[in-house]
Image (cartoon, rainbow, N blue to C red; front, side, top):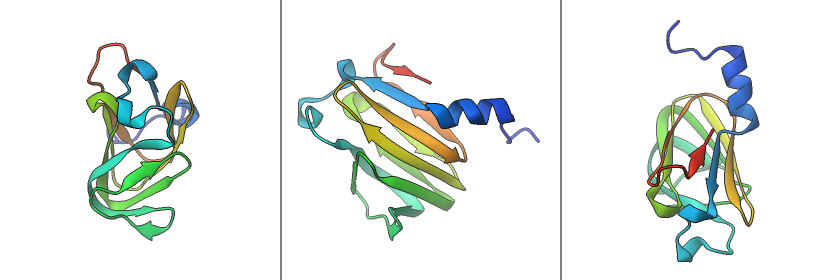
Length: 118
């Protein structure tokens, strides 16, 4: 089916989906564990609890989308949209933010050319 990712693509996405360098960072996120903000979501949980509009997403958080979708706004206007039946975990260190998919699909939006890689 056209909507299904190949096993190789899924494995690649599971290893590292998104790396946003500090070149994209806003001062408000510098030096913190903040990954971004949940700006849109339907049928989403964060660490097993129902997601709230505008909820801050931290390093270590696990987002699970059932039949809806979730949009996480990140530094510099970049973001990630998680599709239905998706589970993603986020890790932030001093150089980058990484989103790791254990299942599902995501679309990455980069505000600055060259700041995102998959």
